[in-house]
Image (cartoon, rainbow, N blue to C red; front, side, top):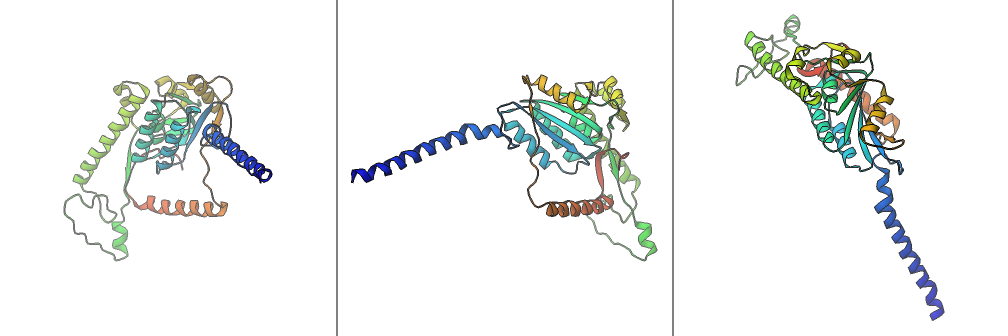
Length: 298
């Protein structure tokens, strides 16, 4: 009986040892992988690409939160290639970057273009790096309306509207703007413009009056932005990485951590992206748009 008991006891002891080993791995080793899933003992810099028109901010905000929680990520690097986009999403991204600055160093690297909402968001960073020829700035607001009243008349279509207030159908594609409509919209647009100017002044530590002087929608080169205090230094992406590493006190080489790519079969993701692009294009053509966006890019 005792001879048969020893192998069972040995197996139990082995299971306990394996269990303890796995617990140590889960507790101390796996957290070092961070959001990228790449295992390393080196310190890391989180890279957040901000690309294209800023239509929504949920994904970018969630990634910033994840970077903040990862103790191995010592700094965050924004790589901005955007002409701007919606007012709300640009402001949400700006706000989340400001939160991140409170706990980690944030550097914005401006690529080909960082205009309007793209610049708005980037201005929340600790430091900004731009190429000499980067198209940046574009501090301004644009609001567009599509109006098809004359077209509908030509094809014999009329629209009747019942509303509870004078401005309830303001911006409708079925009628032209009245002078009172225009005055009310101007008030709205200038208030959103004020928010833009004040946010840049706060993020860049500049007098509001100085920002207001160039807040006429003009797009500037990176070199011009440097002269005006809208960016801190001229350089490329690698220069921005080095600056982030220095500000965060990272000794030696740092690993760049990028957001995880969505999982799924490539054709499924392609069809989803294509359908979203078509739907968005149709919606953009018809909806009223209030945006921090530069019109100079496709």
